[in-house]
Length: 397
Image (cartoon, rainbow, N blue to C red; front, side, top):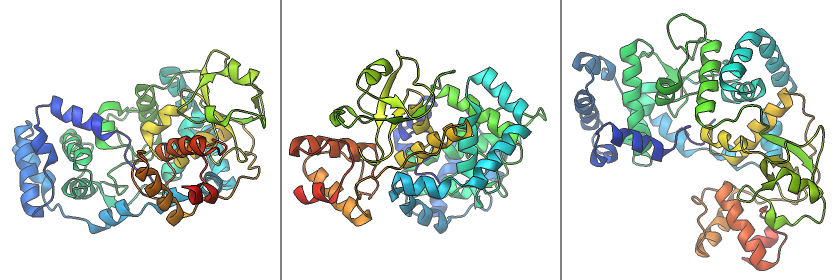
């Protein structure tokens, strides 16, 4: 379900360089698959892994074309927020979440005590990643990682994960022939990459192992520790639905702009339910479908969601679902202006690139960079600068 794995390529590259592996070794990709695997085996031994363990780990490894197909086909993220959220959030999923909240209440209490992460946040990731462990993926994890490292689209991201999986194997927590998960190499009920498991894995059930596939306590505790390490701030909100005044300066909205909550309140922003967060917190007004659609206040913790997944529509949906698990009402869809379809979005992105904007790739997905570029062009052309691209904007460009 993810657009990209949780750790950035830059972070993984830094980790690999710190371990003494050269840039050249990291960049190696493509060519004969057998020769590529032989290179991985040699590198693993140079890294200090036992030669017998290396031989057993790579025994029977194969290239999986289905992984490449999955990597290239992520059209689900082209949907708008209302459509995406309604497809992923159902009454049965909410009810199942509440049942699991009760079943693992002691685990969630311990996570909040140790890491300060709210149970609603963990329930949301657990729900969206694997439907509470029911759908964890059936791709062979070792083969997926080796396939993606061999592919030359993002080798620097996946190659280090192979050696992390090898370390897990040496510890007895990974079976190269039988461990399965998502197409991008994530494992378990909350879908974590091998390097994440090494760094943040927690034995939540006390059996002496970190088993994210079979043990909900292990998966949830590990996720809580990971989120704290990524910058989660205890006892602070992450996302809140708001009501916005019609005269708000739209150019000041968006995740690249922020004000203190007290300043937003003075401008007429008010909560749809409950009360706004502490007045001294900085927050951004997020309009996922423009000034006429749903409106949210995104607090600092909202940024941590992007460390787990980098799709804006996924992150907004996950953060909103977390608020639902903690009692928030169904969002008000209001009446957003019609957006752009996939082909139109790609045409828009090409025009934005032609004007010198960095949109993060012409992929038909309205991500954060595309939204920032749209807002700049809206300001230049005299449109309401709400970051929501319409056909009228496309035609003017």
